[in-house]
Image 1: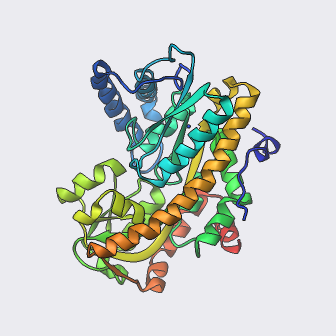
Image 2: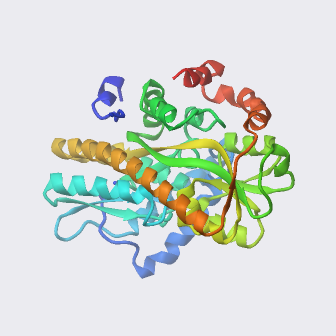
Length: 385
């Protein structure tokens, strides 16, 4: 897709089903659920390796996995008898998450613009698979759209997206939005579109992330010693927490609560919304304001499905995407403030960190990973925004 074409739908800050997948009307019927679970498990073993995309030696197995991922969506049903097109969209948050608010706005606009000819079915909480699996389903046209974070949803396929994942790279939220809504974000979006055969309708925000655990406050990097911390399965986050002295443990977000209960990990790093909404406060106590990551989320839409839509509905998809960015970001801001109030009431202890010590510890992470994102010059460009 040319850069000229991209600018027609690019979202700047002012201030998601056709059969072959994507077009279905019902969630998996009871008889299909066992097959769906087997498909997800088989695909997940191949596609989620923590440090990137599957190795070339796995090619035949990968093809099988991709087929099984398509089956997940196809088992969900077929085009409604009333002729209504149902677009399936997915995200990994609960029903009350800002992602849900974003997709509800996306749905509202599309249904309104199509006069009811198109409806949107939202699958939350990784119902159809992990972030990475959902990304592949969008690529294949088995899913209309998904919320794909620069960590778990994109980085395995598009290394350039890791530019957003470097620790402490953003000074504040305004800096983050200048980067993702500006030329850097657009260049990354173009690479995502090229590699995954999707449209990037804009960037959502998944919050400012902090480290937390049930053992002790983290004030200096030395306080991480001996702690197993769940991180987003992306190389830079793994390297970051290992450099800080923790035992970085990448895993799917959906596995985290049980891992905490069973002592597989001692803590994790999330934003306030996830910490409260997923009830992690039941299994942790100390939140340290590391503010190490502002998590960017690409709202991706299947190019295959988009190209099958008539021009008026294509424009409606772009409009719905722009509207969803505004609503999701506003929801994240309000829900973050509300979650903090509730977490304090629940007795969670918050503390600041000795930030210069943390920044010093992760310098090597930048040197080791600069080549993934275009070199030190690309990182310095982010700093200048």
